[in-house]
Image (tube, rainbow, N blue to C red; front, top):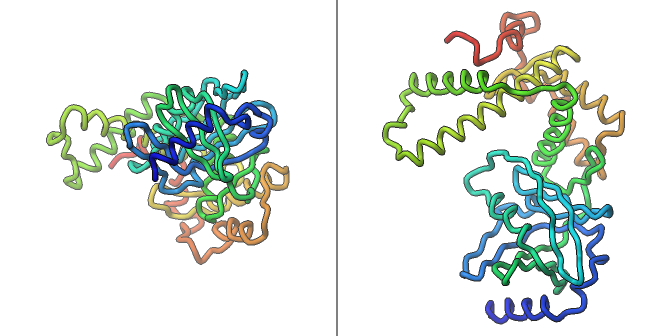
Length: 309
């Protein structure tokens, strides 16, 4: 049955007149169902809503690949669908992610067909068939981009990620190699003190993977700490204890209120909006540092990678 279905799709890709009409793709939004390779391997996302493809009206595409985002152009020349180079972020997604597999497909796509409301893309020599289903209606809009995530926590994360990225760019917040090296060394020391340093038991390849993961984690945490410090200095307010470090909760709320008032993000439903704001307004959810305490004074005074043990 499966072979018959794929064969029918391939015939459709080759002969269906519908696949030459690129206008039918403009303005459509899709989420990934699966990537079927001709060697019978199938890659399916754990959460399809985190793997999306949007054909924007300006001839460009917006792609979400789990924790990464990509953008590029697409063309339809004589019925041959092709994507230009896809520029994407390089965040470290969870081990179960198929982000890299998904992003690697687009440069090889050459045609498409619609069948039963689904979109099928075919790569060169029919090396793989990429199946999509229509995305649900948008739940929020951030910096002019629609977001289609219905889970409240994931939606909050998506909104904060884009706004914090924008804030970091506006305020020239970056990490330096020396900061990363110092942070990684602190991580090594902390793990060694807890008896968790077992790199001597790893192969060279595994040790290299661990080193890359540590560096990516260090860059991410340093950058977020700097964003938090900048927001705290700008907006002030109370600070809460969090597992990954102090968080300026009131500064977050004031910053987000300003961005929402400026029209930088909005919601398409009251329920999700209320759930989004609950984290920033319900004090019972958090453990606050005592105002004026030494913990609060030290929260953003000394970078974690410079503190003495």
